[in-house]
Length: 87
Image (cartoon, rainbow, N blue to C red; front, side, top):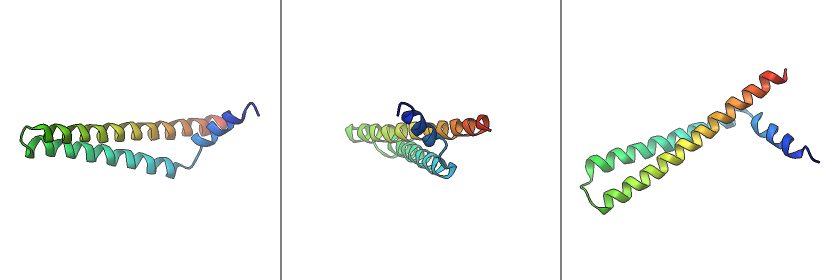
């Protein structure tokens, strides 16, 4: 029972690469969406509180997407290292 968290952690990192890549794609898509929103807000909207709110929302979506993508990338990397050294 004391190693159940270790087994759960290993199962998480050695999961299918397809699932990790799906999470990575979602993160990159959110990041891209946030950056497009940021570009649109700075080029099409006149300086106002509305522009600032759109920029804030775009930065939040882009930042969350970046973190999501990096976490998925690290998951895939650690999973590959575990598989390599388990042989």
